[in-house]
Length: 321
Image (cartoon, rainbow, N blue to C red; front, side):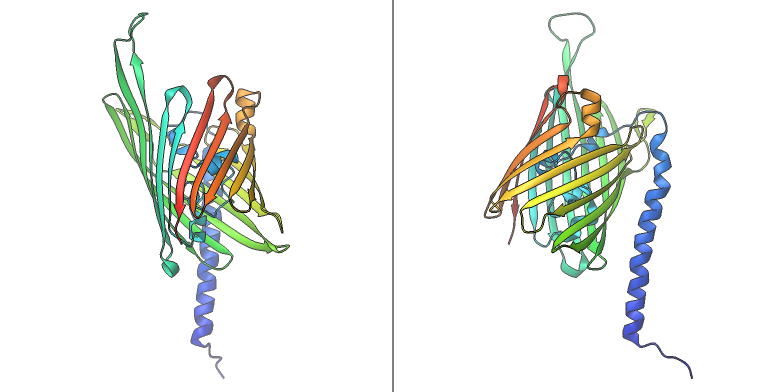
């Protein structure tokens, strides 16, 4: 007698196979890219590595496993499907050497179809042009970096989700321009532990061809990050830990924490081993705070950068009901 398989059982089996196929493909891609990270050289479009949200910056950039708001577009698109309501955010950063950084993002859930997001990055400054040791510059020229980011993510199960970004890049130095594109791929797993939620995530960022000015080309700043976050049971304390490796750079460990008082005021603290090893002093630390007034959000982050100065980020946003 032939054994029959009911249609509902077949659907469950097919979904299970699909779920594990995506999970294994993500890990295989992550593993195959790691050998690209340790060759000697330099990268272009490094502005893609700047954390555009003050919340994450206040936690030293621990973002691969912290996926519960609009910051996940940049941090790890594998977690964008955790967003259940519309959100938008605007960031202005006072960066080093009079460099200004602007960021805008929007996320829209489509229920069973997934979550769609978009972001715009714009970094700009003016540079004095001198050909001799004179008191006044001869002229000024502008430098800008920008990227349009389209993000999509979807829950595969109650435990596992994935997502990806496509980035359209434009850079300009005076009259010279360079254009390119990049892609990110991320995943997130959620587990119930001791009555709370443990999140484990990973992301490969900035996959794509070299970006070229005239004939010279530099590879994109390929980055691999794995992170974990855990909210301490019966408290409003979130702890996060990331391990990052980046093309031509040493591996980095980041630690971040966040505490909310009555879901109105938040304090944040973080530590980045890369920054302190390069600049010394207290440059590895970052600090921040946040306000939540009936869904209207305001976040601030401060990061000392040693002799280079400090960076200040301000993000305002809205979570819709």
